[in-house]
Image (cartoon, rainbow, N blue to C red; front, top):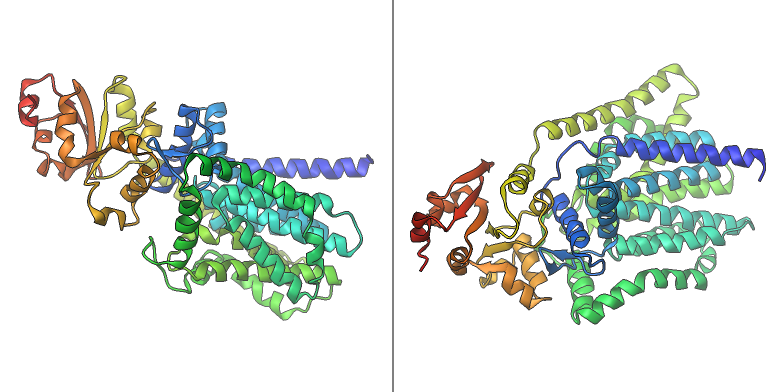
Length: 514
């Protein structure tokens, strides 16, 4: 290996470490937020404590809303790094770093070093990407996989066109697509395939599609994807129907799911989050690309890629902010090119560029600091009380809802009992946490009978235990009279934690225990 190549690779390694450190530096600072962070980290925590690394479980019930890659990474990081928020956010940090570095390397190869650096700076400062790297759910992990798949496929296509080696990049693309499917489902394959197909057709390079359809790559893809799906189908006969039809196709095509938004929602989101960079774009679209055909193809890819993502996710009624993350990397490339075309080395343009990056970073860091001091939608305080005062074996009952992050913060070693009207048909029609638990209970009726407790059964369950813990809305005292005399160990944000001691005569009388 020549000294120049060694220096080049050393520089790439240092850049990767710096990017990883940037996304990691504040990931420890704030509590997990409900529902998403608590849900997905809670599933990973159950995977670690149970030792079952195949079947994701939510409160002891098989949970097949999403595939397992996030849970595998998070459970591993919790086991290796410890029981804290930073370890819980390793998966989005890795996803953000993967997307940033693969984009950087692709732009450096097919544009130039200066554009690659400007693109990386814009991506590291982009609020959507930065917030996503700090949020423990599946969106950033799959966005990183999608980004890596697209740029590796594009690199393979352009290299093949020029007669260079491309099979290594192609193998990486198939592996990354497999990871995307294991991260969040079919979009890990569909979005890269859509973007690359449209790009090659518009670029009049459609014959390169045959180069990308590589049998060893397909075999690698299937070898990575199929084992988990086959194992789950063997264990649970209705798994494939529930995972693909109900959770993938129905959620895309049908209404009734959470956060319905108009068709233009993602266009508005991207316009707001790219507001500091908008002044750089007009020059880009006025300037004709005078570069060679490969650079023209790269710019076309960076236009087709976000358009494909936005159009795809604008079709369903349900729209969540994190869905649009895969559209962010190519837009930062366009922003960087616009800046470089306009700046021409001028000091004023460099200052404005630095301000465009500094303002959103300052806002995001300020938001993280605020949430660290004033946490919202978190059960950390209740979990700490339970961890300190509850004795092993004392049952916990959650009233009318499931607090996803409580098992993580209370360091619980077993599922809890969730109390609700589980026979109510309306419960299964709402896209909510109780419906998730009810759906999961369909895969394990014995566990559902133990952990999904009907409201009418609560008092009998409490009478059977010397001490129990009950957590739920403070207003529950109006429905459960025995809670009025029970000591409240913690109360905040209309939620209360009670300790029910059935060794006390007054408590047994209030419960109607025999």
